[in-house]
Length: 339
Image (cartoon, rainbow, N blue to C red):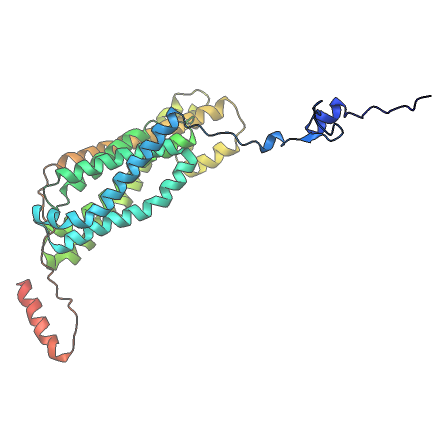
């Protein structure tokens, strides 16, 4: 009896699927040794840039090139800009410094905003601001602050008008962006007006000008709180009277806005709470209308303000004391300059 020969053991299909082995080739010299291939997750896809990627990459390159040229060419262009605008070395110094400081301060801010709202949206906004700033700088005829006042109050007026769009259903993203214009406008108005006041007066009176401007600003803020409270209370009483459920409590609810906020938070959801929130939001809108009207009035009157140059010699009685020998000379020169 012929001896039996065992057939070679070929791994089953289940083993192939679980271990990612390839079936042995019938022409292979070792049919018992399975051929191992790489796992599917180790196969790296081939990157093929598409049309959108190429256009986005080119746009980023152009923006980076423009920013680099703007930063590096500033030091070269400043002497020519100063000569054409009839400025001084101090004005040229502060022009370059303000550009660099602003760029440094806004970089982390823009980075955080782009992470929250998206890279594309922030790039479009920054590109627009860059274009507007470049146009304003190109059309400048001197180093005066009158243009800053115009832009400040124009932006403030626009910002208060946009705040009128706020309502109880406004999203957080929309709330943030609607507050951006008025924030920029009021920030520019504070700084530009302070500098303009100094330019309009004598250098030796700069201290009095700045302190009086600060007094007027703080005093105006105090009046603004009172005026805003009166506008809100009257409007709140009017709005509450339009709802039958809230009309009997219109006088009581309109007296204290702070207590009303706590009351709204403690109320259960229902028609009364919805109407109260609506009345509260509509009353605040009237404040924005009043503020926009006042801001538009100031913007209109600022058009007729005379432009003053910041190119002035520094004259003051508060000079440095270099010693007893030079103290009298410096004091005499300061007094002579003030006369």
